[in-house]
Image (cartoon, rainbow, N blue to C red):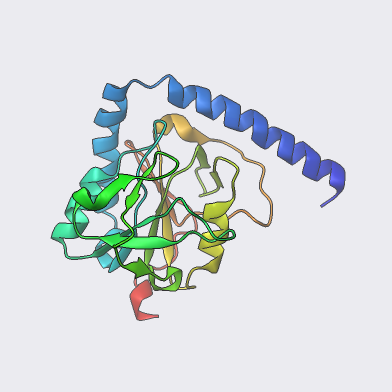
Length: 207
């Protein structure tokens, strides 16, 4: 990739982030809650969720799709549920497991995360990553906030792991500039549809 193409792609990402951030800010809390229930219900119906034993969730901020229903269902289904920590060593996120929602507390960035007493879960033991994003394409490309932490973490995860992006329909775009550092989703789930990304085999636990 030439330097000019790379610069154009970076500029397009900045513009797209601004556009998608504005779309998300336009959504009221009631709309987020209403659509969020539908996204979560659709996600829980996927074979990726049903087959997974260890699920990495995120605590939503700034209009991201809620995940509370997924947490409640996963705990009832006796899955191991873990969340990322805000204190990052290098580029790879660390995860701790929780057994109830009460174990999530505001971290140093204001994002809810497990307490220090919660069990650390190695990244290579996570079956399914539930991933937030500012935007996604219909074929599974993802635009994050620009830190690159999720991309680095997903690259460091086990080859048998899978990833599902949660989004509102407003966050789906036709095209998106990407680099070799970007990681695609296996599925992108919105309130209206489930979009195939990589769509790799969901019997990943047997591989």
